Image 1 (tube, one colour):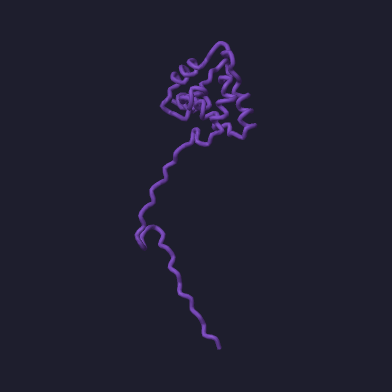
Image 2: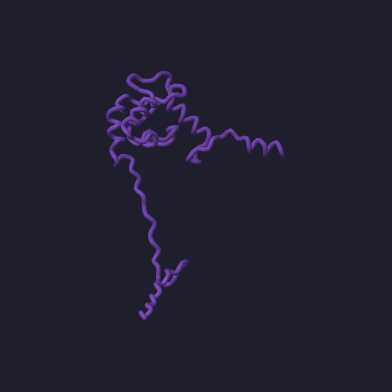
Amino acid sequence: MVEEQNEKEKSTRRTYRNDDWTEEQVKARRAELTREEAPEGYVKVSEVDAACRAAGIPVSKLVRAFGGDRGMSAPAHPLFAFVYVGRTRYLPGNVLTEGLEMLANPEFLKTVRKRKPKAEVAEGTGPVKKPQKKAKVVRPQQ
């Protein structure tokens, strides 16, 4: 019984942002993205990373564009579809031109955030009552 608890605590299963993924699905996705050799014209993600930094583009935007750190999500545009060769990720070479233009556009990958609706506040209700202004007392001059 104690050994079972120790095994659960030492689980090698990594946590992913999407808990719906099983270990088998993650391995299958990785195998789907893996190649023996980098396709011709592809560049390392580290080169694109350096180009992004030089252009003032956040690297996190690049990572979101190609589907997250492990590529578990779909790429934002087919241009950002990457492949693994061993443990190294490669992107198509035209990411250094067209891709950087896309990433530099502030509308690309812009998330639309919905504001929470404001609760209607009736006068004098709610957890905090608004302070009332006190009338100033003016002393007569002597």
